[in-house]
Amino acid sequence: MNPALQLSQFDYELPPELIAQTPAARRVESRLLHLDAQGGLHDRQFIDLPSLLRPDDLLVFNDTRVIKARLTGQKESGGKVEVLVERITAPNRVLAHVRASKSPKAGTRLMLADAFAATVMGREGELFDIMFPERVLDLLDRHGATPLPPYIEHAADQLDEDRYQTVYAREPGAVAAPTAGLHFDDAMLRTLGDMGVSQAFVTLHVGAGTFQPVRVQNLSEHTMHAERYSVSPETVDKVHAARARGGRVVAVGTTSVRALESAAAQWLAPDADRRGTFEGDTRLFITPGYQFAWVDALVTNFHLPQSTLLMLVSALAGMDPIRRAYAHAVQSRYRFFSYGDAMFIESAQ
Image 1 (tube, rainbow, N blue to C red):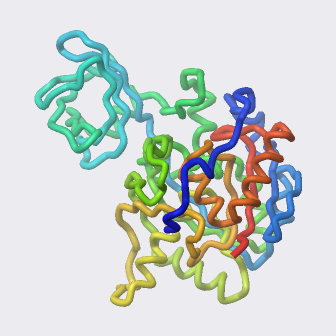
Image 2 (cartoon, rainbow, N blue to C red):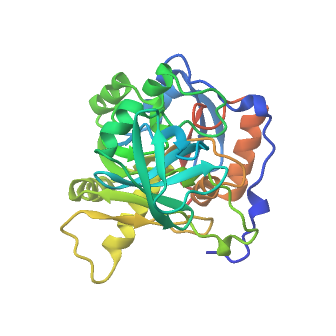
């Protein structure tokens, strides 16, 4: 990492009214800002994406599924608590964020959703180790709420349960959506397949840490939150096949980028066993100066000021092009963040 990179270099002014609070009426009806490899900017609609792709390209999607990870309740003492599951560690056990007037100690029972009692077993850093009385996924499905990002001001409703989930989501475990994928509908996927654009999947379970601010000015001092990922041999084969035929590997979302590049680091290791699935916890922090191994282009949303995701797109496109793109997006009244509009970024590398 470039030791000179500072947090203040990744700031921009965003009028609050540009933060999208609801999704577009239809998934493909968002706008699309195209940032080409030469730094040119082009205002398009998301429905135009097929015209920017080539038959030899490979689209890589994150197939994680958002779980209903938010629960409210109370301690035995009567104090209110809010539990946000960060990671499922066993069928009936989680690591979670807990908001309460006083942090619960080991042995504390939490009555959640007026339906069941869970027990605090201990702590791992800022997270609480909590045991549920039944299978976690079943209890969350029955009693939990969709964990919308902190900048969305309404409580999750039925529309959010549908639209804060990609149409291809299949592996439950995320507490935040891989939002670039929210723009794709089944018809768009069929269109891309019919024109010869290949498709592959990775899994990265997005954690609530994706919304945590960077708290250090010198970025070399920042520690990324860990997220679980898995990249299958089939996806790795498709990546190599696309590059061999002159196609581009187009990641759908920054989470797909982090999964692919984490797998690439494993694959490129001198002692790598390249036959199995590449998986593990990744803390990969991509900043300007990073050399991408597998990713050539990116479909993504607009990201928060001073966020690690803004740093990632700046690494792919260049810091100045991203600054210009975001200034243009603000001036042109694009909609920002999870329910907002999209970008198509071609690598400047």
